[in-house]
Image (cartoon, rainbow, N blue to C red; front, side, top):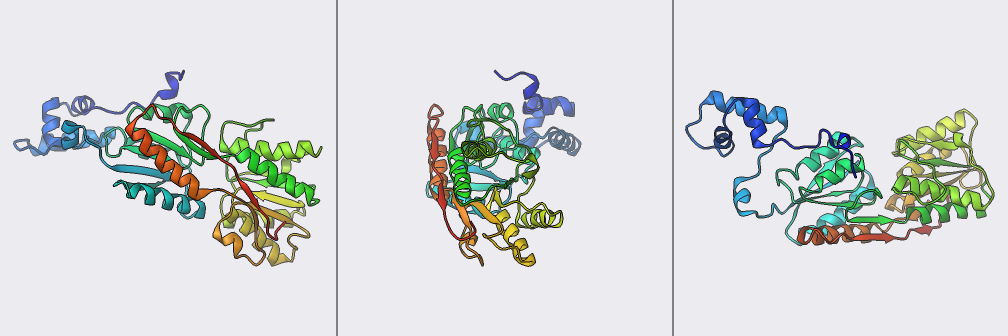
Length: 346
């Protein structure tokens, strides 16, 4: 059960709230919303000001009467510039477009308020559903919005949410990748992630972040190897961040034997930094990415990476959304395995 405190701030304003705020009757507010004649400019201004302050967005009148669908769906991503999310959206949009749906893309930039902007569109039926490719808010907040429309999770996930979920087995993928590094003789292995916080567990966790790190640690434990907490780096999300991380380690003379990064983008930045100062990859530094983006194949040293089945995940997410729109009792949960792609950086 979610506590009342968890849900504070989630309740959406109603037309009655707007009327109360404006000091007018509900019928007057309705006339302004539906652009009916014989409403004074002063009252119209009061209503619009109240709507803006409360964040009220009216349901289109025709659909309000007929109960028809908007045929619009929102998809959220942290950054469209990340090739993984660009590829994922491409598959989702292609699939849903064939079914007559229009996609509204919303970049969250890792911000809770941006994700809420997308979820709030459900409350006035501007959209029929939201596909969350990343998760910024806590489970109770997201779950509350599911009563307004369909919400599907893809890529990232939270075990507490009773929603259709399409994900990859991050625990398995990172355990196998770390085991491969160990087999190659790397001992001091650093871990770089774009996430702000790491949830440390000794088994599979309930979200992408904890599952990746838990798989990484499981491989170390099986090899009877320890992990230096100082080799854990968070907030590393981009190519430039990967370059800065390498430069920091090099400058401080704290270079590990290998680095596992949370994306191919970051891995590329690390390898560019190594190239600039003559640190040999993979002889002196092993670098491993995740996603198997096209850039990983075309590098000066092709990148060893973990392939996420983005095509399959995107198609499954679109299918799960279509099923849930038809029947909310259909809650699809699908888990894909990850594959290690061995190239030359390890």
